[in-house]
Image (cartoon, rainbow, N blue to C red; front, side, top):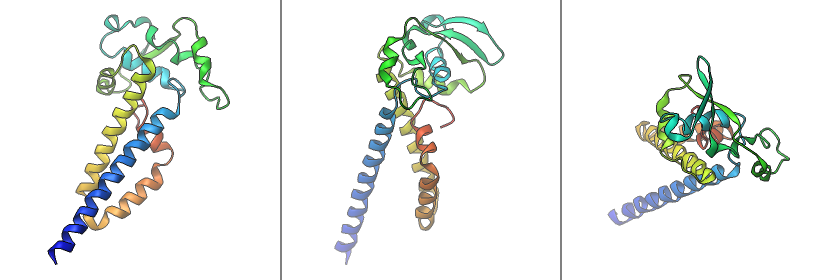
Length: 185
């Protein structure tokens, strides 16, 4: 009698691992699906990330200052801000490599809590595309951990209903936001 129960527990654990790996693969695929800077507000969020630890130490050149935004130029983000693919599904991401000079963008000065941008700044390197994919994956993992924690505190008998409702509401906007540099995710 006990042997059959152990086999069921083992199958459940294997299934949980398979689902977790598939979920992480989905996040990676979604993180790679759009080029850096392709979202209309990526310029603001990426500028805020690169400038999160102080403007001078990260190459940010400050311009006009507003109440909740500051204009900055970030040489490392030159190609991402060419905006040649934003809201243009027919455009190839190759147009970003034709950008000349750092385009001005805005950065956060209180509109969003700064901790989000400071955390993602840990992943910012000279490799723009690699940094953005790493940021998207880090946020995907954090969001996934929060969802997993929520499912663990829900009574076992209700988990499948909550999971199905969340998944139905999650596609595609929740999926997009949970694997992006947007703090709304």
